[in-house]
Image (cartoon, rainbow over all chains, first blue to last red):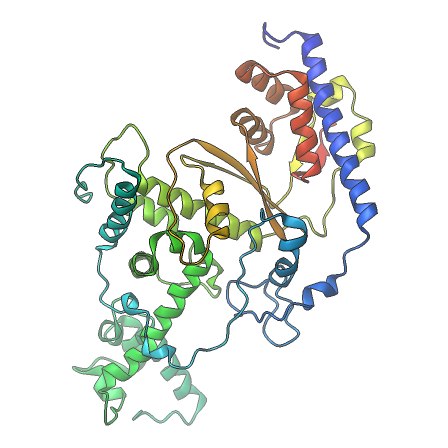
Length: 143
Length: 295
């Protein structure tokens, strides 16, 4: 116990902490009671189709794929999140005819170049210029 | 193909060879002479020509390059889904350039693409150009911050959560008295993450998500920012934190008991009880903690 924090003060802090936890937990319980139960079947309402890759919850493919979270967020965002959620919006997939021509994916070819930071720099220089901020010359790449 | 894939062994060999060639980060020619490919059909002067046939329009190398390009295009797409706002901020061309360089150094080695982007923020941090002014963060730091932030969001979204797990037990809290509270520790929600950035990345993220697809995104000025990420009902939530709130929360997440954590916070941030109570109430409302131990 430090000199600046007496036993009495410390007791008030711990009481405040425990009281805060109880207040918050009680609010959660009340909210849950008022909301009713979640229906897991809601997850299946969304028509998204998972890629079956990293975006889904490991439920495999097929039309009964729950894509947990993905389907939910499509409806939850407007109602409960107030725009504060970060649902990935990763539904929608399927093969794109002609994709294997690599059209639109030029930089994915090999060999790969290492000039991308310069492109990024160019973009940010344009923004700085627009904001009227000065900037120096681009430093050399790290050895 | 000139090989006969009639039996399963031959087919399996061809599939392994095809994978080695198509997924090689240096291209199909390099893939065809890689140890993995040569382990299947041996080495030859022109392995692609000896194993594959050409068409009237494409030679063997260009034929299989179609699949190699599609393979990397899909990986780049996947990275874009993990880092959508970074991609939007950089623009497609710059983002795909970074992604391609990253994939060259960090090829997919896992059965799941979930892990594909785990090292992408670190890759950006390591390859970034030096700061013009070492005393303050610059635009490259902002990109790295944004990448780290989006990766955390992705992991919170896709990782374990509290949807089917226990919550704080009010009865257990009621039983805490002064001495018991001092040694109490809280169990953080498995989906709880703290993110500290040199820029207000979460605010930028909100603006970027709300902006029209063709709107220009103005990147923010440096400003230390803290946010807690968690997930409820499969929806990721972002909670902006004050500096002191972040510091105390971090200590509790790392396993500090109420006593030392509160004492340090009170001294460090000159807190009052009302602020402490409000923070803990907020954390409980947001389900940042799911259990009490040590009481």
